[in-house]
Length: 75
Length: 536
Image 1: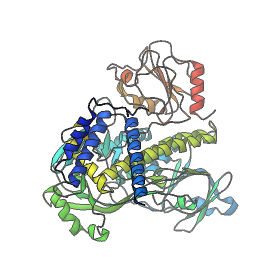
Image 2: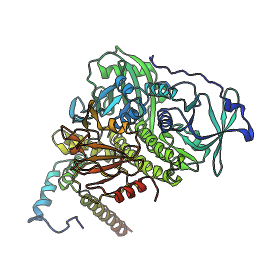
Image 3: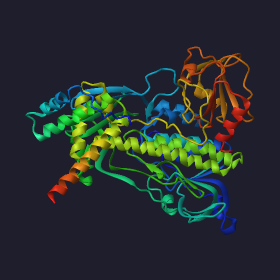
Image 4: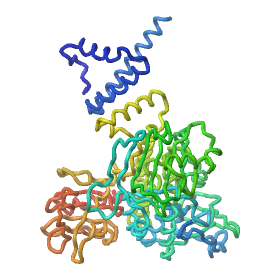
């Protein structure tokens, strides 16, 4: 599995915080624009199509599961 | 409008006087005298076969239609004896520029190195290309070109196809061992064999206008995203011969086709683009894209090529060029089958190689179209991000997709023999032969010319200074280096083929690499040749 899901940051909170703060003061439209640019920049930095595909799969999988859980809780 | 002959007369053929069991029998009937059908007929006739070529019209179609012909197509046309005429008339280009808004994002050069006989592309109106091909056909007595001959029925039998052909003098019957359907995107033969032609339809509308004007724009392909003169949409400007300029404007999805194509509505748009209105219209056309292909390119004894078999969006010049690649791929195979040098099963490789190429062309042109016309808000957002990033990053520039221009496919095919030696470069088996400048006694010559001179059969391209390789029967040889060989004074042939003394490439009759060896042995060559000829 070429996608690394081990924790790679010495201080993961710093990384999460940096992303959160980047969105501060932006409306939803602007936030979505920022994310789009960020995804493209990071994807290019990784530069490995297999890693990118795995990351997309993982993200989609999590998203679908999270949606299902939400729906179950609502029922 | 043109200086080429575009109107042809119907002439009654003696075949039309033969009826019932006496109907004329031919080995090959080609349907459709467009660039693909004409080129195929010429290639097969040059290989020594009689060809009947039918077309339902009696004139070459109006409008520029296809305009970009690739290096690969020009090399094929060189083999057919029409390459120079096309290039002499055409506008040679290799540079494209991409603009976003009013500013240039980046530029690319499709052939940045010297030492090739042919340029990356020429622009030439399709009617010129067809007219020059018709002229060539008329030099070849083995081709019977019949205008206003429309196939109205088709019946497949075990050993032949029976065609009913309508003419101004009424219908007649033709028997053919093989029928090659080059009758375009709306192929009636495709309907007659009952084949599906499913794929993706794009909702966006595009307006093509060919305008005549004298302008000092360079001979480059200019593509705009969101230009000031056409806000929110894309635009393309490209030069053709005779001071004709191709302009392609993306329209809104809900644009009214009838209104949009009226010259009084087109004129202001183009005047905004050019900054003046000193131009005349040559041709206006409005279109939507479809990207689709047939599941099988062969239906019994009917073989489909060009737009009849596959259709792509025009951004990328992958329509006519891929059709010409179909023609060159098919003709040498059918030649061998007709000569009984190869079994009929060799045709399967036509389907394998060219349907994979069609998939690649559809994939590439679909991506370009999706980039130009994002389908969802999120796609539009991602495109916006790419265009913004392209201003300051190299990766962003390379993600901007204003059309990826046609390059020959590399075939993953049962006709290739896998590499057994180590190679650092050069064309791998399944790739087309790169050109290179070399010298013969008579002076400079290109490798592609040397290949044509050898007769475009299977050819062994040898690099070396040792003893000549013992080539199998029927395989001609081009030697580079050594006594009596071509001189590679700039070393470009060796570099482009990653060649050392003794290296050898086995080239197929269409100029694709079948196999390559550091030190060829006769048994290895025999095996590679048998595989490439479909004999095992």
